[in-house]
Length: 212
Image (cartoon, rainbow, N blue to C red; front, side, top):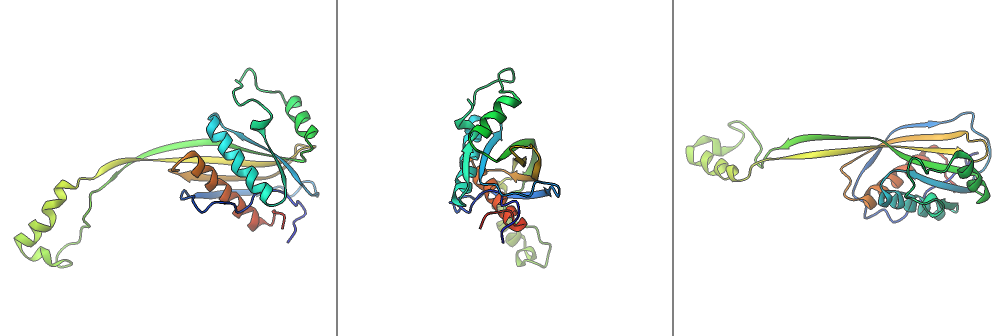
């Protein structure tokens, strides 16, 4: 069904290779958003890492184009190496976006990152007697658990990235929708960006906000 927003984005592209999982934690849809169709999206990943910025914007743009939207990446318009003192001002950005004919702006930003270290035990589940027969004799027990001393556990650190994606009307700057998500232990920048795009596509499909 065609939603009145007729928004954007993002298609089921080549995501089969993505093994990282992104989970949508919250989604807000502005009930007072303009009732109009959107056809051209300016995509801006507000992240410091240039490689991550390019990967995210590229995957989002590819998905948008696959659904028939025009997509323009901010990395192609504004230099990725500007500093806090050199960042374009509001008028410069909005004037350029409107000059390019974009009627919507999608931003995605890393809003938080957490790390948690946990212990992963070595192999060998614990089950008390009589769950396993090797408990019934010394050698049965020893021969089972003895090798485990050579298979120690280890510590690993889980990293979780919390992202927020917002869609705005390019003329009025009104928020159209906002999505919060979390991604744990991405395998790579590209894997992360594909996982995020897949989660966004799926959520927008459930909300009825994608062009058919």
